[in-house]
Each structure stands twice: as C-alpha cells, then as structure tokens.
Image (cartoon, rainbow, N blue to C red; front, side, top):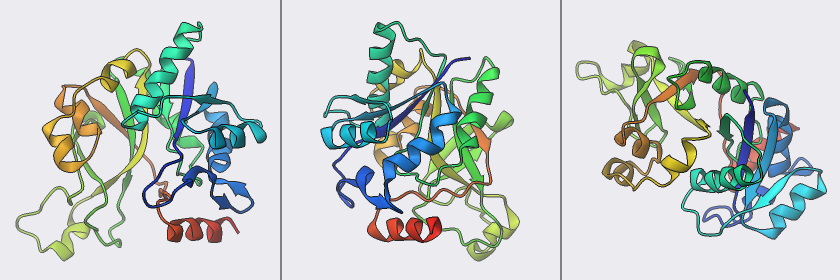
Length: 246
C-alpha cells in the first residue's frame, strides 16, 4: 500500500499570520511537522500557496508544491496535489492529510491511520484521544462519539454525549469522552470526490468539515491514540511548544 502524506500550509492566518514559518527552537514550524512525518509515509509533500513557505521547505531539503490560493480548506488543497501527481503517473493508495500546525506530531499516528485501510470498508480515517477522567471537559474542543468498529457517529464543538441524569461536573468520571485530533487519511480515489461536495447544513452550523462527509453518507473510522495534540493557533500556543521543545 503506497502512502502519500500532504501537509497543507497557507501563509494567511487570522490569529497568527505566517504561522508555518514561526520559529520554534531554531526551526520553522513547518520543518518540525515535516521531519516528524517523513518516515511515516512513502512520499511527503508540503502543499502551499506562498513562495515564502515553498522556499523555506526547500531550504531544509523538503518537498513542496505550489497550489491555488483559492482553496476553502486543507482537504481541497490535498485533492489538487493528488490530481497533479496522478497526471504525472504517481499513484498512491492512501493519502494522509497532516496538519501543518502540529509541530509535536506523534510520528506513529499517520501509520496507525493507514493500518485502518487494511479493512476494505475504510474510506476515511481520523484520530481520537480519550479524555482522562481527571480532565475538565471544555466547550469549544471538538468531541466525537463513535459506534460499532469505532465508526464516527457525530463530531461537535459541544460536549457530547449529554448525560441527562448526571451533573455536568461528573460527566468525565461517568462516561469515556473523546477529543478529535485534526489528522485525516483517505483512499486516494475518494479524495477528489469529497473535496467537491457542497457544504452541508451541519457543517455550516458547527464549522466542522467532517460533518459534510458524514452528511453525504461516507463513513469515518477512528483510531484511538494517547497522543495529546498541541496545535499552534496563537502566540501563547507557540510559546508553550517552545517551552516543551527546550
């Protein structure tokens, strides 16, 4: 099974402009992500819309591809890369969409996602992390509930499920909650199809792209990991990662 890893990386960011290039311990963030993911896939490409990111990736010896500036999300940008590589005769079975703001990515996580595709029913895969009972359940984090075979039933920015007969401060002790981690894997033939799907009402309500796929009838299977995601969205996030790296 040939695996393509793609790291979408755009320069514009409302909260942290130039985010892929911010310095974390002497390296741009995109380099940290690239180096952690490199041995998890057969080919790894940074998909960007900015020459500054392209140049930075090439300077550290990575592979980058220029893509359109008009993509609405990372999935669409990944689909462009797959279409381009297919036209060049480079065919892959599975594509892993690796978030460019995860400088502490667990290198084993992409591999775990790819293993799910040994099951021919797997179309889309993502990762979830069990919330420890000692943690506080926070509104705004993305939660997921699953059914048989760890197939996702729903994703929400609300704390789900709601326990009707239990006080909210006891929820984490009486039910196993899961946070969703923003890494996805797709069968390569499916990626251009789902990238062209229209926005669904559920996606519009929650601002979660994966709800578009569920609404369209596609299955999303989940792999459980103890890895705690630390995405960099703000200067404070960046400083937290610097502290951990040092």
